[in-house]
Image (cartoon, rainbow, N blue to C red):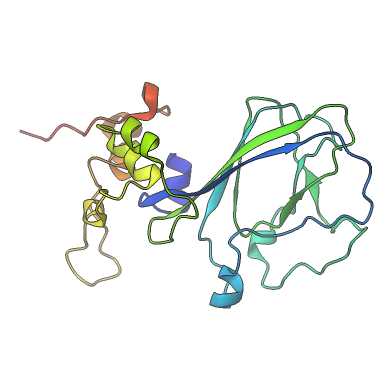
Amino acid sequence: MGVLAGALTPNLHIYHSHIDVHPPEEDKPNAWRWHEDGGRQTADLDYRARLSAKLGYWLSDCDEPGMGNLEVIPGSNHWTEFLPRTPGQTPEGAIQVLAKAGDVTLFERRIWHGRSTNLSERTRMVVFFGYSPRWIVQREFPSAEQLQAAIGDPLRRQLIGAPDWDSCHVGAPSSRSRSTSRPPDPFGLSGWVHAPSRREGACALPRGGACAAPKQAA
C-alpha cells in the first residue's frame, strides 16, 4: 500500500475491481487486446495523467509465455501518442509477464497492456483491483455486507469507499502555497504510511488490514 500511496496519493480508494477467468482457447492470430486503463480519461483531458494503478492477484500459474499472461510495453506510460492498432502483430517492446499463483503485479493505467492467448491446458485466473484518488468516482460501490464488515476499521472503510469517510479526514493545507504539505490523516492510509512502525521498516499491514491510530505525543 505504501507503493500505491507514493505513486498516487494516500487519499485513494478502490474504484474498480474484476476477476478474469480465461479457459484454454484456440490461437487467435488477429486478436487485439492492447489498451490503457481509464476509459475516456486521456481523450477528455487531452493529456495522459497517472490517475490510477492496478494490482493483480494471481490465482493460477502463468509462469510460461502463452498462458494468458499479462502483456505490457515497458515505458509506454511516458508516450505522448496512442499505440497504433496492428492486429496480428506484437507491438515493439512488448513482453509477457511471468507470474505464479500467489504473485502480485502492479502497473499504472498509462502502461499499454493486454493479455496473451491462453494456449495452455490451464485456466488463467487473476483478480484485479484498481486504485485511484478518491475524487475519481468509483465504478462499483460497497455492498451492505462490505460496509458492515468494515465497521471499526477506518483504513478498510477508506479503501472500499464508505460514504461516511469524509474528505476532511485527509487534512487541509494551511495556505494556498503549492509547497505546503498536507498533514497525515491519523486514521486512514496516510496515517498508516506515516506511522512510526512504517518509518522503522515494517512493511505489512496487521492481520485483517486494520491500522491503529498513531499515539499522540504527551
